[in-house]
Length: 259
Image (cartoon, rainbow, N blue to C red; front, side, top):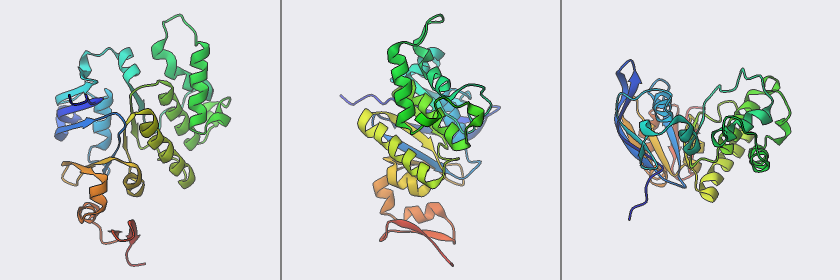
């Protein structure tokens, strides 16, 4: 029997005011997969992610979580199946970092219950997994953009979901912390079987860590590539479509022209 995908998207069209930005997208996201969503600004990456997240309504098509139609899953149950990290989230939150991460446990609590010893342990573990332990007792408004992003991801990890969706998770991180984040996300798929779908502009990192790459081209067409095959083909240079750089297959890296 074929394994059931954690997310199944079938014939999905997304956009605003019933005007589609992307049409008839279909894909499966399985346990243990890290998928990077690439494409130029304004071509629908965030719109697609926010639709799968349930933030935006779909125009057509279906989304399934663990085989269950998305719209039939109560919001509190969705939060036990799928965690979400958005760019610029938590910027104006007046809480301490550890309390923000603790909200990742709320889907598992009744309205009048408190965090258990196990909940507190999960919160602390999530903080330290993403190198944010030193931020635990700091107020969110005192954190850097990169530190806030770490807290947002730690909160998602504390939800203990099968699926994590991230919109530009490394947007505010320096190179060192971006690489560290990439390693940690890859470990979550490899060691814990998480399904991760993240949008990014970082082609180099995507080619290093992604199992598959979803690409939205300049004509708003959706493509799916196996990363290993993509790195060894001329398709990558067609995707980049720029005279200022190219993918060197022999050296397995991007290089800049004319400097």
